[in-house]
Image (cartoon, rainbow, N blue to C red; front, side, top):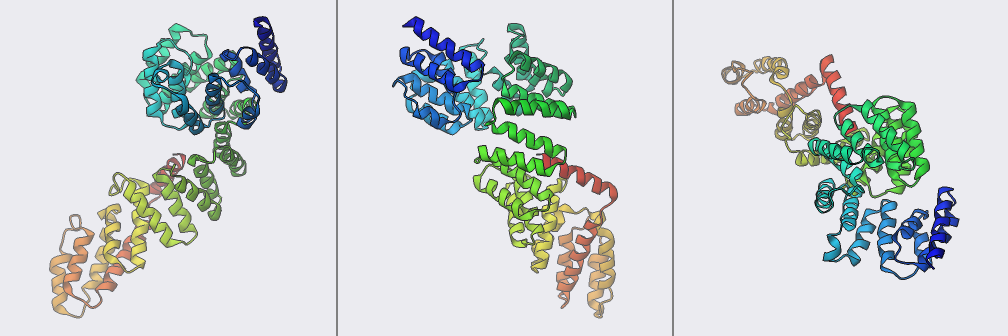
Length: 465
């Protein structure tokens, strides 16, 4: 029986190498029926599957390894939530501390983008089995994303001395050099990784990223295409191709690849945000609102998504909805009163205009004040004060001269100025305040050329985020 099992498994591996997965599947099923506790046969059988439903339909022995295979199957298709549900069904306190299960839990958290939790699991794995190679490339990915360069450098040095010729080690070293902005060196290590393991979809994808960093678009396109050939169901490759064409300013191609990524991973808000950005740049406001609102409903979004939604509503002339998004952004922002941030300044400016049109001048002034420098207010305020001095009532004019006109504008806030006008009790105080706000908002629109360049760069950085 053992010889028959070995024969079936070898035939299965041979057909796998020739990419005849249907034939390989038959031999692996026969091998598992003979020896159900042989884990490699289960692993190869999972590799033959094109979708999870096919695996469920197979006639397999009722063995506890079948449950582990389901976890492996869901992880292959990047379905971390289903893998976690399956793992929770049979995991015990004893199994929870085994290296294999810890590695699976860490991988599930990586796919869920819970990188701090995944890093803690990998650290626990290293404490139990220090020289375990499996999963260390994903660990280095997590350290790279979280910016833990010191720990990443330690991991790279450790595996350089343990096994420098392993594709996993090459990926770790490439991640280290990429974190140090040495992209040419990182490109060399990723190239070595794909030579050692030509079927590594993750290595090919990261190789494409490095080519994009070096503006080597031809090699980057080749790497992404190769990754797509290896695993066409990996949404990360489609998403990366969308970013590639986004950088090349080909919105039609970018929207196609982002759409494919969204089809494969419809619960990931990054896909809909990226699609919304493309549609927004094409002035397709309706589609942009649809995509960005979906990411908002999913809950997988950052503050910049609220800004984008507000911009879409502005273009669609849906002013109330835009104001709602900007108010939500300011509520979530850690320092909404900091006018140095372009997004915060634009929010304040829009809300000031919004409340100005609503005749709520107190709120309009409140939102206008934080984002405007006093130098921008000096000239329009002086012009308004000259108009105020032309009032017919001599007493009121003298009051304004004493309390407002001679005030040091560098130390007088906009709210103080309005309070002084309110103290006069003039019948036309609403007109004066309205004129002041109109001048202020108009003055802020007339930015210098250097400020416009800075804001354009800031907008680009915001969209990249």
